[in-house]
Length: 317
Image (cartoon, rainbow, N blue to C red; front, side, top):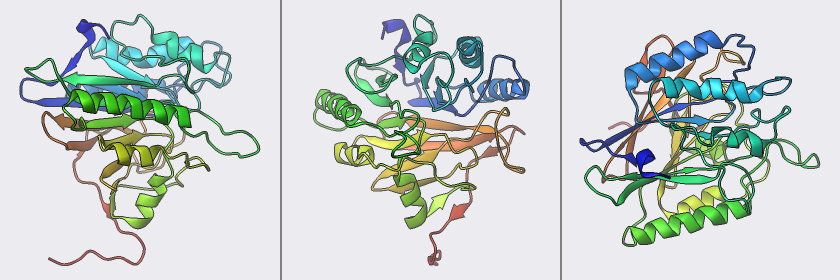
């Protein structure tokens, strides 16, 4: 990444990310006007340092101009003058443009930090970005972007999983950053589209905050990506989309598993569950982050409703 694109903590030590997910735009623009208005409003109110699109930016099946469609989505960040990063979902490359070509659409875009990633591992869009300290040239945090694929082989069914070579790549990147940081894991976040199976586990076994209005559509195969995150000790939180009417988060083995808030109107939703975005704020030097939702009606949700696993009750103070 060139120096002019280097991300950096603000002088006050904060770094803010807006996560848009499941925009589902297509080039004919049906139902996309309110989606774009929502995104523009969120960016104007939150003024983030980075926009992350966690997959399904477009509904590419049957779209004659999918490259135009995906550029129209990220142009919202460009018009606001904010750098952006993309991971693909399962609907971004179902049409006439393959996955490898779709991720390369952003090559040369002055606002894009998106990378195709190593050619010798599975997926397209595996990369890591570092955040420099506010007054330092040393990384103060890292952001991992991982391609969670689209669909599993037909004999297995369901959705794809993060492959072993991608996990090994993550471990290599994490190890290098830890060594560079004097042997201490660098506070990190991870972004991908399809939730890992542990999203189901955390809902069923721990107190979570937010809504779960549909099943967790994770892969049938647990490839061990979450295990690697736990072992490396750097990732504090993961952020996904995919399931449009889930927006909960919960902590499992020291990692906060978070859903974004579905953004697009050109896809299914739920009455009384407004579209929106998840906001994430890091604090330099701290292994912690704050997160909240900003909804289409302007509401800012700082505290989401708690959900307890079956058979558990809140303990009294």
